[in-house]
Image 1 (cartoon, one colour):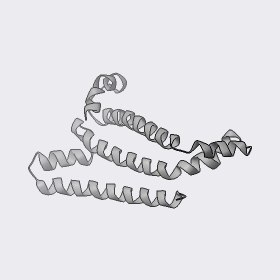
Image 2: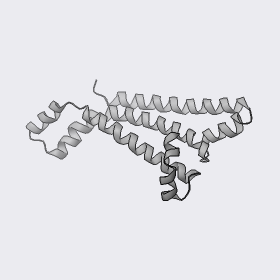
Image 3: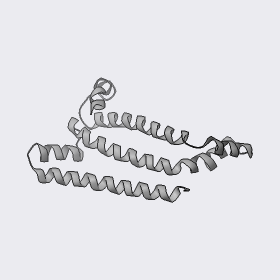
Image 4: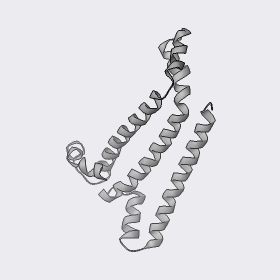
Length: 149
């Protein structure tokens, strides 16, 4: 939430306003870019350099090393990282409802919390938890299928 508010002046320059769907999309995009680049970097750096060096020693070109060593080695952890990123974006989308972007967070806040209608608040919470758990299950299942361990 602090990031969305801190981006206010930049959002106003780029989008023209600080509230609404467009402002939320801009802030969430920047947040997702930072998170995604960090997750990809961490997973690519964790690949054993000896494996890459062995492939290069056997005469593999750089592009072949990328497609036959780096991507297969990093694919499982990358799937888990993207699962984490998806869940983070779900969290962000619920938070940007407070700046008028709509969505389930806005629905839970306006129609549930502010009107003291706890049934709506709990229903929205359950919906978010179900989506997150399905994403986590799918991400774990896919990662297990591609990992070599």
